[in-house]
Length: 268
Length: 331
Image (cartoon, rainbow over all chains, first blue to last red; front, side, top):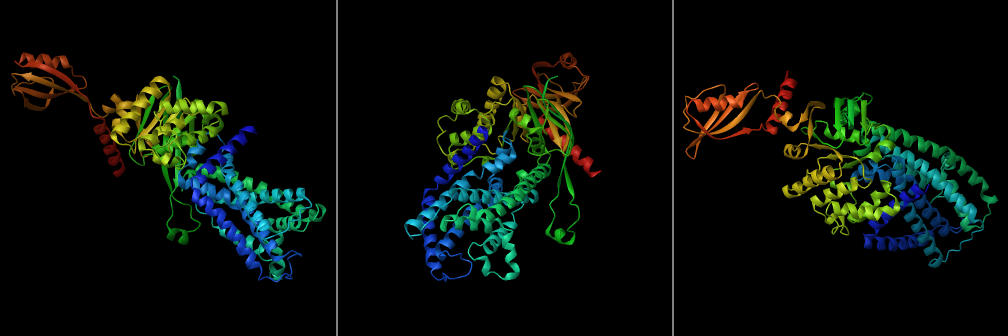
C-alpha cells in the first residue's frame, strides 16, 4: 500500500511541476473560474425560481453545484482515457510501461493530479460562490456528502475505465467521450432539472450516477438534509458503483491484454 | 553456457491497417496480417554486447519490445535471466530499456526531476533515490546539467539521460534500440565509449543493441545477429559475419621488383604503383596459405617490403546478405 502511495505521489509531483511551469496558464485558469461563477450567477437570474425540479433551491446555487460537481465527476469519466492518449502521443507511455510498475497502476496513478486539481477547482467555485455571490451552504451531514462524492467518483471511474479500455482496444480517439459528456449534462440533472425533460426520456436520468449524486450533493450541501434523507439516492449510487467498477476493471484488463498482444498499447 | 537473453521460435504478426474504403466495403473481414518475426531464435551470453542488425522493418524493434514486455509474442518463448517475459513482474526488475525516442521524457521537468519520477516507478527505495541519481548523473556526465530542463538538453545529453534512467534499478540486462540514431558523430563516439567502457567493461551488463549502424556494431558488439524480414539470417562474431559468403582471403603486398609474369597459388585482384614499388592485392582460396604466396613471389624475384591482411567489409557482407534475400524474394 505504501508503495502504491509513493507512486501516486510521484505522479502528483510530476504533473504539479509540469503544470506549475506554465505559470500564466495557472493564474489564468483561476481567473477564468471566477468569471465562470459570475456567468452562472447572472445567467441564473433569468431562471424562474419556481421552476419545477429545482427542489426548493435558488436557481444560482442549484446550477453552480450542478456544474461544479459535474466538472469534478467528469474527471473520473475522462481522465483515464485522456491520460492514456496523451502519454501515447507524448511518447512517455512506453517508458513507464517498461518499468516494474504494473500497467493498471501506471494508468490509474497518472490521473492523480487531475483529481487533485479538479478538487481545487471545485473548492474555488464554492469559495467564489460563498464569498463573492453570497451563497449560503447548509451542511448537516458531512458524512453523507463525502460518501456521495466518493461513490460518484468510483462509479464514474468505472465508466471512465471502460472509456479508457475503448482507446486501448481500438487504438483511436474515444468517440464515446462526447456522447458521455453531452448525455450526462442533458440527462444528469446538471443544468436542466430532469422534470423539465420530455416524460418519455426522464427514465434515462435514473440510470446515470450523476443524477443521484447531484441529489445527494445538493441535498447535503444546500438544503441541510440528513443522512437518512439522502439514503435512497446513496443506495442507488452504491448499486451503480457495485456494477460499474467491476465492469470497468474487467474492461481494462481485457483491453490491456489485447493491446499487449496487438502492440497497440505503445502506438498511436 | 550462461545466457542472459534467450528467444525460442518467436513469432509476431500485426494486423495491417485497413483503408477507409475497405472499412466500408468489407466491415467484418478479418484484417490482413503482416509477419514481423518468423521463428526467431536468439541466445545472448551474460556480459556480452550483442548486436541486432537489420534494415528498417526487419523486426528489430518488435523483438526489443517483446523482450521488454511491452508486447506479447504470438508464439514462442522469450526469457530474460531465465524468466519468461510473460511473467513481467519477475522480468521487468531485471531489464532496462534505452529508447531512441527523445520524447520519452517530460520536457518541462529537469533531468533530475525526470529521474526522480522514474525512480519511483522503478521501485528504487525512497532513501536511496537521491544518491542513486547522483551516482548515475555522474556516470553519464550530466551532473552539472541535472537542474536544467530536459527541453534544453542536446540530443546526446537526452540519450545519456535515457541510459541513466534505464540503470536506475541497476538491471543486469540492457536493451538499446538504436541509441545513437539522432546523434552527431562526436556525441555518438562519446555514447559508444560509455556503453563499452562503463556499462560493459566496468558494470558487466549484458547489452542487446538493435541498430542498423554497422560501424557502431563493429566497434561495440562481441557478436551480432542479422535480422532480415523477421528472420535471423546470421549469428556470429563480427569477423564471422564479415566473412560470410566469402570463400577467399585477401592480402595487400608491397613488392619491389614486381613483374607482371609473377604467378602462384593466388589470384591477383589489383596492382598499382606506389613510391616505386607495386602494391599488389592477392586473393587466396579458403585453403590457401600466406606462406606459399610469399615464397612464390620471392622465388620469382620479387622483394616483399610489407604485407597485411585485408579484412572483409561488414557493409559488403551485409549488402550481400540483403541481395541474396532480395533474390530469394523475387524467385
